[in-house]
Length: 64
Image 1 (cartoon, rainbow, N blue to C red):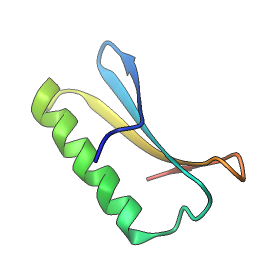
Image 2: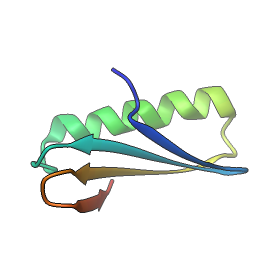
Image 3: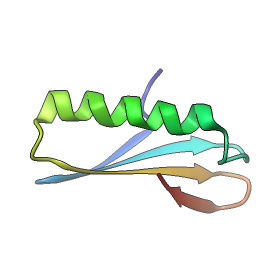
Protein backbone atom coordinates (compact mmCIF):
# COMPACT_ATOMS: atom_id res chain seq x y z
CA UNK A 1 0.00 0.00 0.00
CA UNK A 2 1.11 3.50 -0.73
CA UNK A 3 -0.19 6.89 0.42
CA UNK A 4 -1.52 8.81 -2.59
CA UNK A 5 -0.89 12.32 -1.27
CA UNK A 6 0.31 14.07 1.87
CA UNK A 7 -0.35 17.81 2.14
CA UNK A 8 2.49 18.95 4.35
CA UNK A 9 2.64 21.84 6.79
CA UNK A 10 5.01 22.27 9.73
CA UNK A 11 2.87 20.56 12.40
CA UNK A 12 0.03 19.23 10.27
CA UNK A 13 -0.25 16.49 7.68
CA UNK A 14 -3.32 15.87 5.52
CA UNK A 15 -3.47 12.39 4.02
CA UNK A 16 -5.58 12.12 0.88
CA UNK A 17 -6.41 8.75 -0.63
CA UNK A 18 -7.92 8.79 -4.13
CA UNK A 19 -10.67 6.34 -4.99
CA UNK A 20 -12.77 5.98 -8.10
CA UNK A 21 -16.23 6.15 -6.53
CA UNK A 22 -17.33 4.28 -3.37
CA UNK A 23 -16.05 6.14 -0.30
CA UNK A 24 -18.01 4.03 2.21
CA UNK A 25 -15.96 0.83 1.95
CA UNK A 26 -14.81 -0.09 5.50
CA UNK A 27 -11.50 -1.30 4.04
CA UNK A 28 -10.71 2.28 2.95
CA UNK A 29 -11.27 3.61 6.48
CA UNK A 30 -8.97 0.92 7.90
CA UNK A 31 -6.41 1.79 5.23
CA UNK A 32 -6.40 5.47 6.27
CA UNK A 33 -5.99 4.53 9.94
CA UNK A 34 -2.94 2.47 8.95
CA UNK A 35 -1.51 5.44 7.05
CA UNK A 36 -2.18 7.77 10.02
CA UNK A 37 -0.34 5.40 12.39
CA UNK A 38 2.64 5.16 10.04
CA UNK A 39 2.89 8.96 9.71
CA UNK A 40 2.70 9.34 13.51
CA UNK A 41 5.50 6.82 13.96
CA UNK A 42 7.65 8.67 11.45
CA UNK A 43 6.98 12.29 12.47
CA UNK A 44 6.03 11.83 16.13
CA UNK A 45 2.90 12.01 18.21
CA UNK A 46 2.67 15.83 18.20
CA UNK A 47 1.73 15.99 14.52
CA UNK A 48 -1.90 16.80 13.70
CA UNK A 49 -3.10 14.42 11.01
CA UNK A 50 -6.32 14.69 9.02
CA UNK A 51 -7.36 11.91 6.64
CA UNK A 52 -9.59 12.17 3.58
CA UNK A 53 -10.96 9.96 0.87
CA UNK A 54 -11.51 11.62 -2.50
CA UNK A 55 -13.82 10.23 -5.17
CA UNK A 56 -12.28 10.98 -8.55
CA UNK A 57 -15.55 10.31 -10.41
CA UNK A 58 -17.83 12.32 -8.10
CA UNK A 59 -15.30 15.03 -7.12
CA UNK A 60 -16.21 14.56 -3.44
CA UNK A 61 -14.00 14.56 -0.32
CA UNK A 62 -14.92 12.56 2.78
CA UNK A 63 -13.17 13.27 6.07
CA UNK A 64 -12.30 10.11 7.99
